[in-house]
Length: 157
Image (cartoon, rainbow, N blue to C red; front, side, top):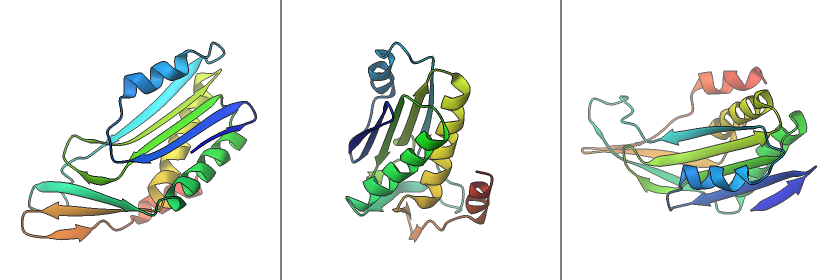
């Protein structure tokens, strides 16, 4: 899903395949008015929530609905900051420790806008994107519950 708003190109992808961070940044750098690119990459970690080691993390979503929700978050960021480019890639399917989960890239003429907007997008993705996570351990599986602290962070915005 792609969209241009007020000279800001927004791209949202929900996909099973991995992404190449350097390749994604290189695509943005061709725009000579950009002075700062901020990025956040989330990776699968052994959560430590259970006594067992995490075998895998499964991410589920509703195609179409998820992309639309993420696009709305990106549009909100564009309204708050003067951005030239926003890219969000969120993976779904079964992932393993060390695998990439999410990439948020924001670009603007100035670094502060890029930093703040990337943090904003990530905070809202964590709590508002319709993506469900299930942790698989050797002896059992459990759905990841939302955290109250993640909801409280949204109040700061």
